[in-house]
Image (cartoon, rainbow, N blue to C red; front, top):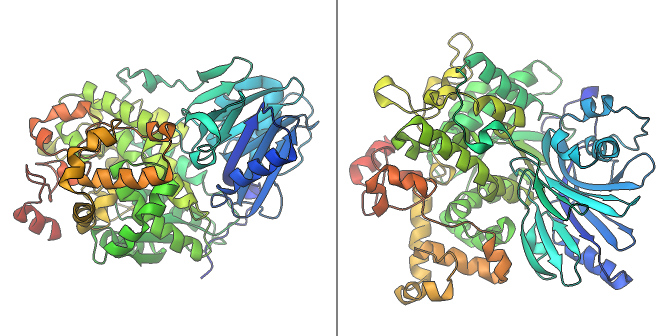
Length: 583
């Protein structure tokens, strides 16, 4: 079945998600090195299977692998300014490109319909301040041939991935994934979100400094209408595409709201057809059942995919290679998303909307039930947002890009964050006695009795982490499998084999082994965060409940006394709780 294709002339701009690789200041300008750059860029081809290209200027190399989302027949990179002496290669999309172009003061000639071309022209007039003027998700490298300088930048939250490396000859490297850097750079690391690298200034500097970043406690009142409209704007601006698209629908609050908003917007333009929705899970999993209910309510063209535990286990090595982490939660959740993305791409779909980010913004993880006060609640949400590029952003981008699929995340829209993170956090606090469950603000903003966005059973459904919602037995079977692969003796020497981020469990040890096979370099293992966690908390939040110290697991079921299928103190699911969860 053919997925949706918008036809409005307002959307006819070239948008592209891709893989980028840039080498600046190389001492090797031979054709052999050029071929090496092409070879390393090929490692990113899964991100951009539609076309490949490389631009060489002196001792600078800019390569890209393109995934065409809008106007697929034109607009290949690199992109240029009017005189083609400013060159940019981009992974991303710029939502405010039209207003940026309209506000240019000089005379500019645009060579393509690309939204990303605006970067080169805005840079001409505003220099390196261009990064802070962009509204979108992006990673780009820009070369100014007029003075030989270059810059790189990553979007505010880190929705798109970017790494920076340093060659033996002093060259500076940038790549969408570290697999293109690991064999040729002496050192490499994650490029921090909201930062610019400037060759003129000789290093990194932060350009994104919102009010919430310094963790001050906001005091703005909660306005349901303002919050609702901010999310609707964030969703609809992401519906610009000329290729088949859909929405990832887990049946949870976040993805269901995104689907509902997109569905309403599309209904206003009857040339768009039905919204396609996609869900994955083990047979009979909570997500499959809930997603089916939402899809029926919204009337989407729903696609339901199931996988077996063995299929998930068989994919683990490939998953870790693509997502480039050994973080337990990320791997648990990325595996079903990776499998689903392959099937979605086989349906002819290139872009999907997804619900990442809401739990960080509204304190949706179940451990937030134990937040002692609004101050600690808010600081924890800030910490979660700042680290999101190492977790959910990484998972959503890389597990989909592994199959040439692009995921867009409305909850991490810059404008929406300004609204949602500016509200007095007392409005986000959870109070069972008053009927205030997790993400109460978001639920109540879309609780429309006359024209409901969602069924009440979904709008007020308890939070399920994706790795739990695809089927409770998924995590349990992963642990069982790790038990067969990792011995007690191996665990006893874990701190000697893995002195950095020593794996605390056999499951973590198993993932670490798989990771090291693909990425044995020390810089690679240093890109992965560590530390204890319960139900996806930061280490600081574990102190909110002493009982959690004996049940350190990132699963939502580790939130003892909160989740209806919570683990007991020894990490097992109690039988009464399990029965209640299945009811």
